[in-house]
Each structure stands twice: as structure tokens, then as C-alpha cells.
Figure 1 (cartoon, rainbow, N blue to C red):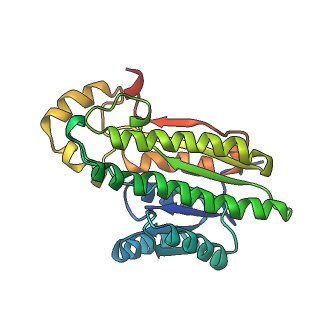
Figure 2: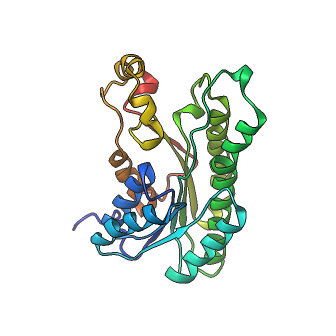
Length: 260
């Protein structure tokens, strides 16, 4: 008999920031595994491009322009996803910004607020609204669900010159752990994903900097930048019944950087 837990047919996955980067890598794998996918992003053009590609895998694809730093848009977006697709089984709170690297002593409150909005408030509201739906569903006899917060290696390493960003990612890890403990009675799991050095638009400037390549890549045992496709299998696992006993964890995806 074939092992089938990774078949997501009939499941609905929502990915914030799912129109590019790590979010799109996750959305693509989820769609290929059979899930219907909801993509949130601020760009209508990028949403449309993502939907076109995701639609080739055969499932339903819904996109919505949502700025996760605006609470009303998150609340309305989650309600719309449930209304249109009937349910949401897994949520990947991936949308975020990279901050403004620079000396800590020169940083400003405006820079702090700019990064906390999408990276903390947005994840909080997204997972809260998903939790409300999942708990209600469980109380009606249909328990289960998977919440995933995309943090960063910055949450657990000493991140110089970008402390505000690191603080937001540490907050995501703590938020997820609290959710994992509280929501387990309804069969809802919560985990964090901590990417390392990944080749995305957000890290384009770092990738182009020779000094970064000199100092970073030699510390990555796999000897390459991570790719967005490296998050597909993990997304499918976390959305599937294969991870039904896996909660409250922080899964590091960094090519071995943090242990070398």
C-alpha cells in the first residue's frame, strides 16, 4: 500500500507573501501536492503571475491583495478565503520585510515600527484569524489545522546591525510556541520555520556583495545559497497528516550554517 499522508488533495493552504520568494516556493509545492492554495500579496500583478503558474498544477488557486500590516485586511482576507473555499487547513505566515541594516546606535523608532508592522503584527493577526476559524471548525466536530510562522535564523543568532529585524523574528518563534500549547486541544499544530541565507529578492543586495560571498558561503557546509524550492517539502510536511504529532518546533533550514 502506498504511503499517502503527503497527498494534500481536498486541503486548503493559505500563504501570505505567496507570490514570490520563499512563500511562492511553499505555495508551489503545496499546489503540486494537491492542495487548493490561497495566496496573499500586495501586488496584483505578482499575484496574477503566481496564480497563473500555480493553476497549472490542477487545483483551485485564489489570490487577494492583502497588506498584513493592516489588521482589517487580514481579518477580511481570512473570512473571504473561508467563504470561497469552505475551509482553511494550513496557514503559512510568511510575508515580511527585511528591515534597515545599520549601526544599532543610529537606529530610529521609525525603522523599528516599519519592520514590526508586517513581521510581528501581520503574523500575529494572520495566525489569530486562522486559529479562530480552526477552533470553530473543531468545536463543530472537524478538528485539526497547521499554523506556520516563517521566522529567520536571526531569531536565534546574534544579528549585528539589524536588531529590529532579529527581534521580530524572535517574536514569531515565541508566538508560535504559545499557540502550539494553547491550541493543541483542538488538534491545531503550530511551528516556526527559520531560513538561513536564501537567494530571494530580499537578499539580492547581499548576494551581489563579494565580501558576503567570501565570508558567508564558506560557513555553509552545503556550499550554496538556499533556494526557494528548498522550502517546498517542508511546507508539504507541515500541512500534511505526516506532521500530526509535531508542534511547537523551530525548524532551521540553513544548509548547516548555524552549526558550523
